[in-house]
Image (tube, rainbow, N blue to C red; front, top):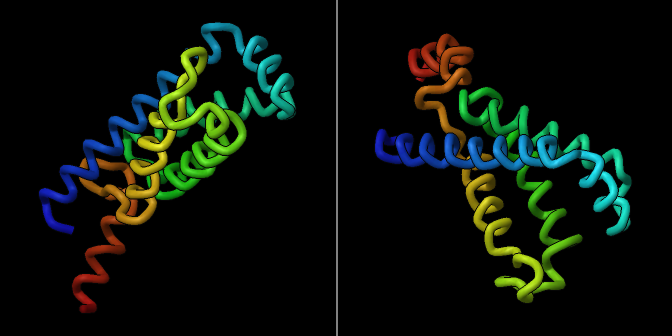
Length: 141
């Protein structure tokens, strides 16, 4: 991948990671039990609130440091698809005045799908872990 594309992917990776990390932290700071109750009220198992919060925190950190970027981004993609379909679709793209729409979720989904497709190796743990493999592939080509 060209350097400018890698820089763009790095910016998306770190931004998406930071945003998910913040969302996860807020779930726990605001009282995860409130989120558990809300999940139950919309027909989702309450324990899923813990799973979502942990995914957002651990996945956010993983994206920031570039560890498992494609896998974490795929998980975030599924999370955003679920959020859009289960919660936000009924209120529309821009919301209904009482609840935000799915525009932010759609932006997060687009960023995550891009990272699934392209990855982001610049300044990442993934690059360090697979450096030997990529060097061997270049020599073989």
